Image (cartoon, rainbow, N blue to C red; front, side):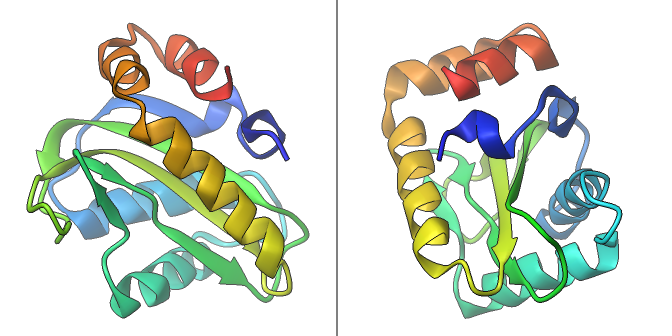
Length: 148
């Protein structure tokens, strides 16, 4: 599966104002809920938060990959935000997070979930990609970087 299969330009926002991890997760949940009429922001947020309670999804270098599984919802969806100011995210390296890519999958999609997370981790482990994402001038420009 390609990142372009789960992400569209409407679910990429740059320079988002968020005061906390929780607020950032709420924004991401809203973007994902808008992708499928069968989803609600509350359900998506609950799924992301439930996974977060198991341990931080902060990867380090200011990146987080919040993710979760949904009992209701027919597909796999991603959303990305770049924050104006980094927030504390309890990442292992203690670096505040400014780049968040959220992923939700149907409850039974175990292997797909792992494959997409691996692809995202690879994307965000590349320092050149991070530099481009952080300096991207628009939502569309960052979307193009994420799917390339």
